[in-house]
Image (tube, rainbow, N blue to C red; front, side, top):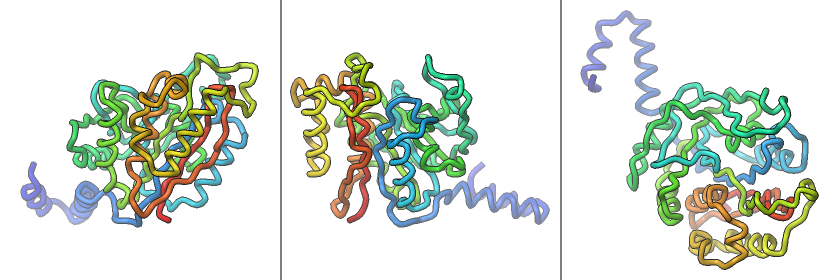
Length: 295
């Protein structure tokens, strides 16, 4: 039914039903109200256990939340949802996905029942012109999303959707796609990239799992990444496969790094990047997180 026919049909309904339909129409046509430009975050999510442990990193997430404007909705690009093509979750009630194994039952018992936002999914699909965005009704919220968002908004009262990482895209294409999401920031949407800048599970020093420790190559890559982030050198960070062996070891598979590009791509000329949770772990991981906001 087109808009004109829909409006005409309201005339035949009882007053209460008409009011309900008008409310629905408002939500469909203008689901997100204009707002001040929202900051953008990249969150180093680390182990799924951060969802239930009390440590300096989850305290860092909570502290960051105290300075954020209240979002109307959240869009997360998580390292843990790779697809052929780009998808966004479009269900009203996304499930909590426990996409890991070998952890205590208490972690599997966690539920994060935040609502979804079919309206935001539709808006996102319309904004992106560089590729076709599919509307997904089966995924939900994986631990790259809920394990960190639960510390920002523990009441699970802010709608959350996820955007997948198309494994067929180049880093340049991911960066370009992310720039198309910029208008959502003026509609109260908090955009979060969730991954880890340095992430090589094959080389983890398991005996230093809870220690602030980095291998030399991890330290080298980490320092170069942070200099580029703070200096606004996005071109170097997009071309991460041309930065030498330290970067190759730090980013042995790209899915945990690419969410950083989604965050950086949204930076504007009047904004600067700041770091928090800026520590390495277990030799080959970093928990460094990034906030981009107006100066």
